[in-house]
Length: 194
Image (cartoon, rainbow, N blue to C red; front, side, top):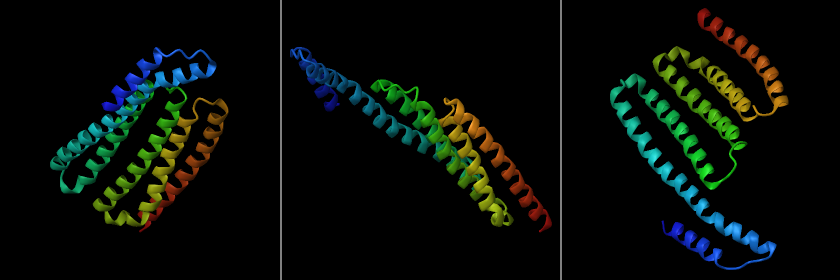
């Protein structure tokens, strides 16, 4: 809070100092940006603090309700909620700082989808192995398949605004889908045969 007051005081003081040159205009615009920067960073820090508290309390309530077999589901939901809150806090913070987020939103969304893919694939395979121990020998392949699907969606979200990249990702995703289908068929065949 003290930092915000200092930034406001400096901004107000520089409005009364005459700086006629181009360098003076640059200094003035930089100084006038300080309050927005400080407020954006405060939103980011305070938002992360409260989102961690909220997510931990939700996870605690869910762990108390779920049976021992599905405790991993509460961790999965906790991470998904945290990723969603992080995206919301980042977007609010960037808008407050005046950063044109139109080009940054797809990058943030794609990165969050990929992070979510890592979380979902590890938690899902861990839960399935806990429920069905026979699945352990196929868990790495299933985890890779889930992860590759989330990576494709994340990359598509990142570069969706560029037409040519969308076409390339579409062709690559068709090839990966065929590979995932073949791997899934092989896993099912081996599981049924064993």
